[in-house]
Amino acid sequence: MRINSVAPIRICDNGGWTDTWFARHGRIFNIAVHPCVEVQLRVLPLDGPRITIHAENYGERYSIDTPRGQYSKHPLLEAAFDAMSIPDDIAIEVSIYCDAPAGCSTGTSAAVSVALIGALDCLTPERLHPQEIALIAQQMETSLLGQQCGIQDQLASAIGGINFIEMDAYPHATVHPIQLPRETAWELEARLSLIYVGDSHSSSAVHEKVIAGLTPDDPRLTPLRRTAAASRDALLAANWEAFGRAMVDNTEAQRGLHAELIGPAHQRIIDIAREHGALGWKVNGAGGDGGSVTLLSGADRAAHRSLLRTIATDNARFQSIPIRLSPSGLRRWQNATPTSRGAPLRNPS
Image 1 (cartoon, one colour):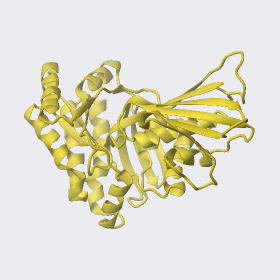
Image 2 (cartoon, one colour):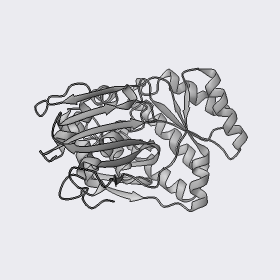
Image 3 (cartoon, rainbow, N blue to C red):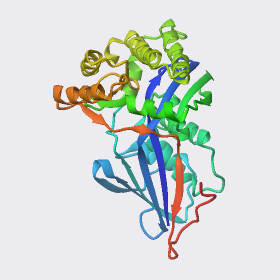
Image 4 (cartoon, rainbow, N blue to C red):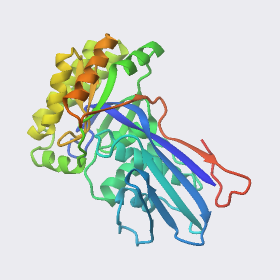
């Protein structure tokens, strides 16, 4: 028996940094997009290694049989098995793949956690709600792995779509899906682009730097919270100039948190975008070294393509990653044959 699971990444996380324990409360806007993280579990009789991991993007395949809390090559993957209650009488082979580069600042690690936990949840008696899976994935990174991360990446991946998130007291949040007319969604998708700067980064390490310079309820977080509502209102009105301003305002507010959050590569992409008449730019995620930038172009499609060509020729490391909106979040299904063996998938969805 095989269990399949996919979960989208996210871009344009306006209001990011306010979804953290040190911000205490926040307002966040984000957009779930393809490419998705893909997970496939193969459930087998227990006559060999209990857990085998195939990290396709890294070309690695290995088995684990270590005590809880002791991780080897890929702690993020291995911790998921500790976070979930897996039947003792089966063996699991898991493959994980994503077209988005690792360290792209698009919540890829959260999408990996959500997709893997979602697949493992299919082996348990009760199915979890997507928002419950998001919470487990976030707690796994913070509690089991001791990393710094907010809550919005996991929610975007689990729920999908375009969301305005209100976090009144960390980590509890209310998610408000933003429903756009079909034509507005098409126009948004056509105007957006995602540029990878060619270097990965550790968002947890960047968080540590920023936290060191913040005080509780730091006033520098206030403009970040405002950009989330501004983004929501602009999209609902199909006001592309206002949406672009919210993206720019958020990037500048990020810059105000720490000088290193907007790196030279980000700034070069921003400068090119400005020269080509782009309406907005958002350094994704925590920023810092590496990562990516979301761009919002104007209505002229030829100018949009010219912008992408200029970015590609300016620096061979810059890479435009094809994206499209992901109305769905976590999706799970079973691929079984008459001869499949192992535990049945419970309540497939």
